[in-house]
Amino acid sequence: MSKKTKTKRITTSVGGQAVMEGVMMSGKTGYATAVRDPDGEIQMESVRVESSVSTQRAKKVPVVRGIVGLFTSFGRGIKTLMRSGDVYADDDSEPGRVEKWCAEKLHCNLFDIITYISVVIGVILAVGIFYVVPQILFNYIVRINCHEAWHYVLLGVVKLAIFLIYLALMLAIPSMRRMYKYHGAEHKTINCYESGKELTVDNVMSSSRIHDRCGTSFLFIVVIVNIVVFSLINWGIGIQNIESGVLQVLARIGVEIVLLPILMGFGYEVLKLLAHFHGKFAAIFKSPGALMQKVFTTREPDPDMCEVAIAAFNEAMAMDADPAVEEKKFVTAGLLPAKLAETKKLFAEHGVDESDAEWIYSLVLHVKRSEFSNDVKVTPHDAKDINAIEKRRLAGEPLWYIMGNTDFYGCKIKVDERVLIPRPETELLAESVAQLAEKGDKILDLCTGSGCIAISVAKACRNKNVTVTAADISEAALDLAKENADENNVVVNFVRSDMFSDLHGRYNIVVCNPPYVKTGEIQDLPREIKDHEPVIALDGGEDGLEFYRRLSRDVYRYIAKGGMLLLEYGEGQLEPILHLFPKRQYFIPVKDLSGTDRFVRIAF
Image 1: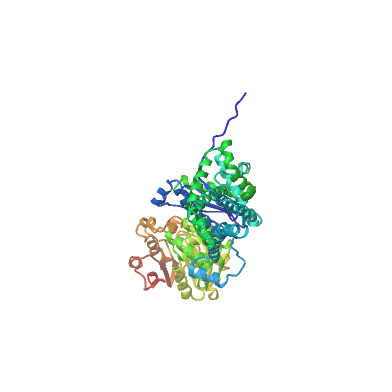
Image 2: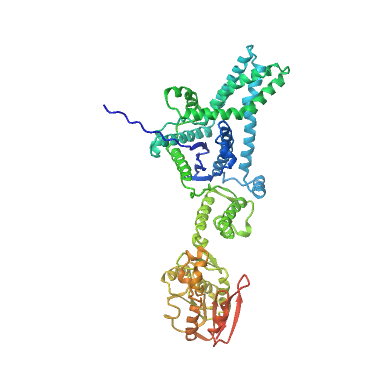
């Protein structure tokens, strides 16, 4: 006869809490909250927690650790509940004046403030319902003549009845019933793990929704201890001897409130002790709390709820296992000032230009940066788009590669890793060419890349009947440049050529923005440039002047008499470049937007 094998139970320190449409799981080093958002996607927020030395010591002292854990859990619970509510912030209504003021002055949303006020009111009501009401009810409305000790026992029974009625009333609220389902999913997930099963939705669904360490069981223990202890204390210290009935009631309430944290710490120790035993005898003591979980505070969850609980549990466990696991944030809606401030702070912490944050919000929300105001609302869908861009930008990807295009001198230019991103200062080079071009001129753009100069010049000179040719050695770059020409509805003759090698004829204007970074300095460039933009478009040789030397050798055979050569160059390169063109008639240096020498016009 074979013996039935018993699965060894695993003990975990992870505990949880149901939140709005989700679950929070708390581990040793942090906590993770998973929420299913209105789009049906699971969003995750995780926070690492660093305890002070005094807190760590307190957690080793019986009863005291329960008190510390109580206040920690309360604060954490309120915070995660608020954050889960942020995921469901209404995006249809127009922001009111109060909401705008909160966003501008306090950098928070009105929902957070309302939640904080609700918590304060809730605490006041809890004190009233569980302490004041029983005393008034028992002492002034229901008058029972009995021994003083039994008086306090019956008072405790009244408290227990009120507690059970409160739990029953919560079941009448639809949102609470859904939260109780997530509470069940949280229990099932932890039970599944502790039973040694793989955390799959099917395994979690088949696990029990009753757990020994549940807060409901904890509250029941506290209520029972409250009945016993305060019956003895109130009777023992002679509160009944106080002549004034009002003072008697106030004294009893005061004693209970003062000693409540100690009783909760004691209740924590009892709950923890019971969790270590799984026999029939222990089940007798656990059964009241288990019954309350089953009847009141948990419901059978849906599979998708279990999926959320599993995600939160796995994230909490991953944070405990690996300190390198980074914190995560919910993607939430809100008013523009507060959301933009969050992104700017994030970018500043990671060394990303804060102006990129403004561009992201401007492009996603279709609002000019100069028109940002407190009236602009970031919807959940906008927030998701912004968050996706933020992640790629923080990973080092250039903003304009992420966006897919950029504005350049009146043109929309597509960009990707085949070409350099056109810089704003280069617009001055294109503008100079357009202004110098005369009717019927032939214009050549060497090292065209995305085609931004050639295309914008062709567009600006439509009425001058000019002919624009653009050349580049990269076939991939030319393919993208042709797309840009089509998108901007201009005619440009594109030629694959290594500088002048495959070009013919003479041009009135030759413009070139060649690679001019020294080979040895490329690795010192910002990571979004060196890791993403094409090296072939950056590397100007050992001294950065390789392409200028090639230009100086051949330009005389391709430029018309009286023609003009316009060049962009790097810092400190003007003088050596001019030495390469001794046959020039004159030259005019031009400064960029920051006042730095950046361009030169050389006349022949």
